[in-house]
Length: 259
Length: 322
Ligand SMILES: Cc1cc2nc3c(=O)[nH]c(=O)nc-3n(C[C@H](O)[C@H](O)[C@H](O)COP(=O)(O)OP(=O)(O)OC[C@H]3O[C@@H](n4cnc5c(N)ncnc54)[C@H](O)[C@@H]3O)c2cc1C
Ligand SMILES: Nc1ncnc2c1ncn2[C@@H]1O[C@H](COP(=O)(O)O)[C@@H](O)[C@H]1O
Image (cartoon, rainbow over all chains, first blue to last red):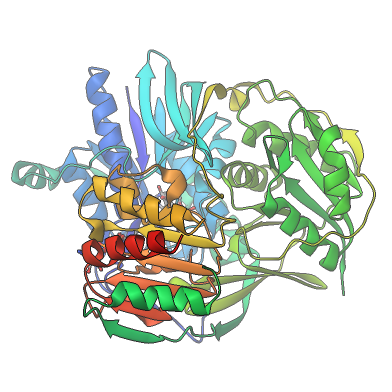
């Protein structure tokens, strides 16, 4: 069973970016890493391929400047190879443009199952899984907290407001996974060494048969009209607990007349 | 300048409209000349008076979807309505599971961009959406520049719901076109996790616990405290991921948005993704042993102390009062 995992490579959230005042876009700074949220998909893919007794995990990522550090992490975890789409024409791409690119790349991979995270850490649009599924004409199950493959069907426990639903779908399908669906492994030294030799295919927009006018700034069809600072919430009284912390809370609640 | 037609993706749970749906209908009434609702489910007739009261003239419905996950068939049905001559300028969803699924599918189907995580919505001839980044420090207004229908998802609790006094919405059944395998994901069984007391996103008091509790069993004191205060227990994602409490308890960017009168955070550091879900609370109390924990930067009352001392004492004091 071949599993495609979409992985986003993002600037390390430990060093947050800033908004470029002139272009009104996020300035990416610091080192690029594998989005934590996607480590769950990679792990899930590896476990499912393993259980199926064959097949491989293929990564698909769109990133600026042929950035591949995050891919190397996922390859070191055990993925077999990667498709990396990088092109100046993609700068400024919104979720739909990104989905168009990912869908075209996924078509090359002959996948039985396509995994994504429910939302990325830096963009968190959260619509890409559905957009990719629609573009590929595939069924989709989002917010998976448990996945099992049974022959040519996938069984998913899908998170809901009230609990979870058991959902079944034929394969191939797109499934988005939540954090906690599995425990991602740490790459072993052997894995890290092996990753260096694994193939990363670099693709351009033209290779995918997409028109540059559909993606990047041209495809986004939206503009930032205004940026402002939010009203700040100020810190109130911060006190050390000297055994009277609970009393202080009670007094505060009394003053608010909620008790 | 208002826009003409707004279509609201309406949702309900156990026969009642979601409060977020009523919030959207209220806002839609303010920015649009005409508001309609779109609803998947067998009970549109029963819901039509409520939808109407909050502003919908019509409720378009697919009827029962026979267990199919709604995203794909709902998007196909809306696209079909548009082909058939319905002309929404704006289609607005709540940032829920099914809302997001339908929005994403529809975006690809209509080839229209999306704006999600909205906190505000403006019609100034076109449509603009307000969002927050950097954990709510910075507000951004983004305007669609292309052709409509514009597609937007709004976070719950962004607007107040108010009745507009309209009569029952007219129920119009729409066709779900055959979408083949794309619509093949089916719900086999639903599991509802029972919880007592007020709902997390409606409770006047929320008591949340985080990793600072140390171990799963200690969450019981959060539940007990919440019960004593007639509030709801909540959680940070750290302890949801660790499996201590169900996902339905999670407050934050990927969980619930809460705006209670009092939010009491126990052993929660105050990551930006947590704070976006609770900084709208009227009053925030935090208990954390680290005086530099970010949560203190937004707390009205901060107790630098050990949750294992402060919380049991608090429970004792409250019990003594009742
Ligand atoms: C894409 C994305 C989405 C996310 N969405 C959410 C979300 O929706 N909600 C959410 O909550 N998080 C979310 N997170 C996770 C978030 O970044 C934090 O990791 C999480 O909120 C931390 O939870 P915590 O505060 O319980 O744990 P920690 O950050 O580990 O904090 C524990 C705190 O407890 C304190 N403490 C320890 N022992 C004691 C004691 N005995 N007494 C008192 N205090 C003590 C410590 O000082 C510390 O401040 C998201 C992350 C990502 C990447
Ligand atoms: N540039 C990208 N390359 C690969 N996968 C992506 C990319 N952007 C988004 N994804 C996938 O889609 C998910 C949802 O992204 P988003 O819609 O940005 O919240 C992410 O968690 C990834 O799994």
